Amino acid sequence: MDPIRNPFAPGAGQRPPELAGRERELKAFEVVLERVARGRPERSLVLTGLRGVGKTVLLGELRAMAVRHKWGAGKIEARPDAELRRPLSAALHRAIRDLAVRHRAPDRVEEVLGVLKAFALRANKADAKLRDRWQPGIDVPAAQGRADSGDIEIDLVELFTDVAELAADVGTGVALLIDEIQDLQPDDVSALCAACHELSQSGAPLVVVGAGLPHVPAVLSASKSYSERLFRYARIDRLDRADADFAVMAPIEREDASIEPEALDALFDASGGYPYFIQAYGKAAWDAAPADPITLKDVQVAAPEAESELAVGFFGSRYERATPAEREYLLAMAELTQGRDEAAGTADVAVFLGRKPSSLSPARDSLMKKGLVYSAERGQIAFTVPHFGHYLLGRD
Image 1: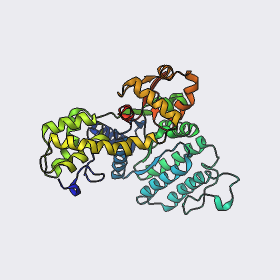
Image 2 (image 1 turned 90 degrees about the vertical axis):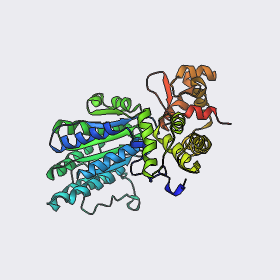
Image 3 (image 1 turned 45 degrees about the horizontal axis):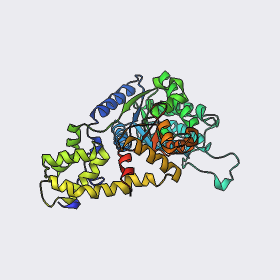
Image 4 (image 1 turned 135 degrees about the vertical axis):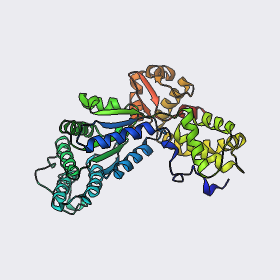
């Protein structure tokens, strides 16, 4: 069928496959927006799950919901090698601009922008030369003595409080969305938890919505023991059969086309219900189909093309980031699990490789920092990427 009309191409659909089956999370966030805007306390939200389940797409939809409710909203992606101040400053600058269009006191808005600028400027090293100093692009003087101590925990509490009060002035709130939240540096995680704790005590209208890998709850708990009370965790998993079928059929039907039941069976078997894979196999099947409807044969013909694309863009890009020692560790995990999406014992990996467990710790820790594996519980290690073990065993 016409590839130009392919409803599975990125950005082609009115509602991407990654949002199928996420109505519960969307409705829950709708309640959060309403409760916080009415001055009622609500916990911040953290979405957890493997890669490919649509966390980032869902995070973007939650931001869009906040904007539709006239909230201020800003979104960042955490990076292991970057501190929080600069990206957070840009995100909150965006949120404040959202609020400013409805605020009737420009001086009040400028006051909060001054606090934000003071917070942002502390991202510069004290000994940095003038030409090397980063400027946040906030066209007001920096405030003095507010959110500028240099202690990220103190500064973040003060900044969040001021931004939340600005939102309260116009009867709405602020949503700060953080993707890959497990990549925040330890001091930044601690500061974020402390700020959320302060907000929960005061009922201020600011919520943090994070998204990350399955071990995020452990990361937050290790930072602050009370973190489990601050966040509501929502596990985002692969789709069940009904939602997976809907994710395939809805885009196709929008193009006045159809798909045979046997083809749906094959797409579900190939994708495992993971939204990213549904999109990849669905796109390839559409392109392979010579006419309506899409048949089982079309899916079978398209499968190698989808697998080739996944091998390069989804699996391969991650595999290439691993060192030889890390690849050895990954392959051992794949062999032990026989390519299934299961955890392997760290002691079993050591036995398989004929090595002492302590000698493998650097490779394992590096893989965790790169987001390729995670430890759901002590002594267990698993891939963050679905079907990654199968991919590794299938490499030449």
